[in-house]
Image (cartoon, rainbow, N blue to C red; front, side, top):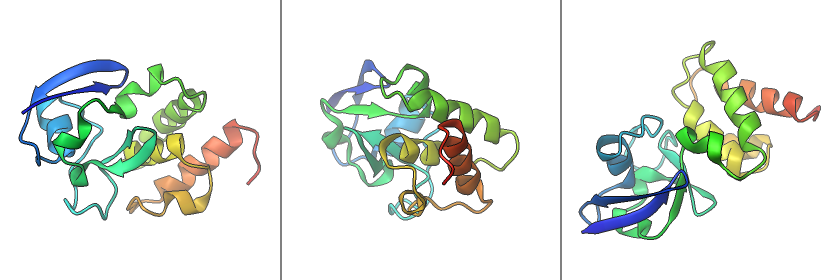
Length: 146
């Protein structure tokens, strides 16, 4: 099946099976490295993407759902129209060198589409505490003392 969608502001076209998980297409076909494959069941969150303005698990999103959709990953944050995107990208880049960073792309997508509060970040499995540092960095950048 031919799948056409917008990825990070650019139209892309791929051939895929209708039920093929989107994380496989993004990572293996389109070489989007920030979309990692983890649990394959939507539990760990490391495959999180912005899909039509909502955070979704790409491993649980069939390719056929992507037809005509607008999808954003960390690679596209520099071009994203959301004014929060630039500070999120700076925070992610600053933290990437200091922590394991496995969940940083998913945390960045969560920060882009959700409120900057603790409850928004609980769906992404983080083993090293990056989510807390990212959240604090974003609050500091935005002049928020939470």
